[in-house]
Length: 289
Image (cartoon, rainbow, N blue to C red):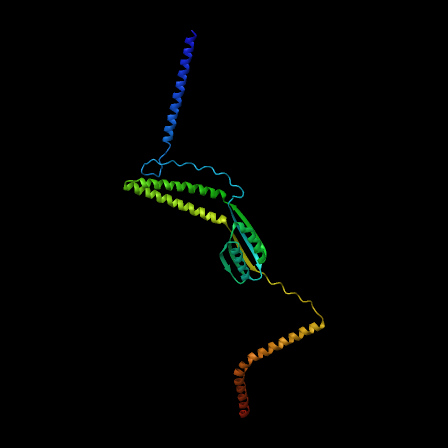
């Protein structure tokens, strides 16, 4: 009886083991089949070939404080003694700090200039500008563009992989229609890639070089000191000076009128002279009664 029970137990255990192995085998086959069909054809593949499905970009860890991408700008207004000397000094500050100058406009009493300074020399350059004159206004601003940079870098990687896949399909195309369709799609994706690259380069340039706009204005002349009123002698001096100015103005007016008096006065005098003489020569007429 014990042998029969032990044999039955061994048979049941063997059957259970076989069922477990068959279940594992079937699940493994299903997994392989699923992974084999995971390559979804690319929508942009007009040839109908099996493309590689796009994988989601891995999540980027947050950047540390030192790795943040900042676009720094500043606007400075200054009062200076000489406009052109201040503009020359601003150019020298830009070049000595490894930067360059942008838009510039100068007049006799005011000027404006744009400086592009490396981000690590931003604060030292502002301190150097303080030596050119008196700062009347200074405004600094920093914009964090780290998330934009990370997003553009991820999109660039994905777009490069997409272009590479289309190029691989183009190498395998056989018919003229397939080549034309794939080339059209390749052109579109390369255009998108260049657009993304341009945006990334522009944003990187803004983050690498800070912008400082400087406006110079000429210092106003100090007001003339008011003289204190003096005594009798100072009044006499002022009066004599006023008389001299009056005499000078009078003689100047007479000198200006002299040519006109000579032109019109002499004929008028001769006319009155001859008229008066004629009255003396002509006898008066008497009426007879």
